[in-house]
Length: 290
Image (cartoon, rainbow, N blue to C red):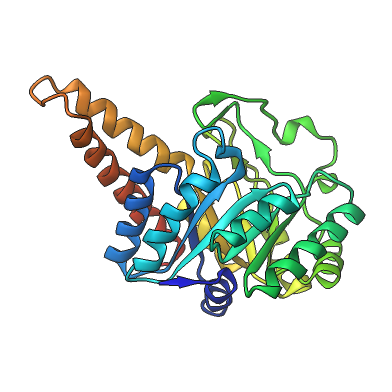
């Protein structure tokens, strides 16, 4: 059942829960995500990150994601993650996505606000939701299985310069009319190599200042206890991909390592799907407090 992101997150905000947002880069991932949500009878966000275009383009994977979202037994929001241009956000909306994230967080506040406001105008005109981002989210040395440029809290003299400021967030929300906001409070994208130093009280301050659902990107290395506090403080959407992806990879490796099994790709694919499903279920149980 296809729904908007705003519909899911407004309810999550009321219930002090969070909805898991999982990247469907492959058919195995899409199936595993939807199966996990259905088995737990919980809503879910199925998303495509623009950074995954080198794996599969939005034009190709979007209709597949839409097919599974529409036929799911639970509410599913179809979301573009980290869209970087007006054109890409418009493309996602044409493909039936019910929400888009416009990420101009690397630009000045004025540019970010002005450009995000235009995306909000476009998306709201067709009944879709918009997520934006303020602040800087750290990146580990390994992202999507490849080396990357790592950074951490030790690279910055004053974390207030890169963490989301509550008063700035309030002004941003007032200027843009976004439905939810991804914030920076110490989380890390990619494989967990650097222990995150989370500023959890900051989350509550931003919630009080903006009064909209907040989003956590980069949950690598975050404990279940810290997830619980972050969600209680205002996080309503949690992006989750790296560990789910690794679970599928590990299951594939174990399948091929068993010399007794026939070398059928489709059988390995099913094993990966099941592993992804089980990992997503564990995440959903934490986010939805099951």
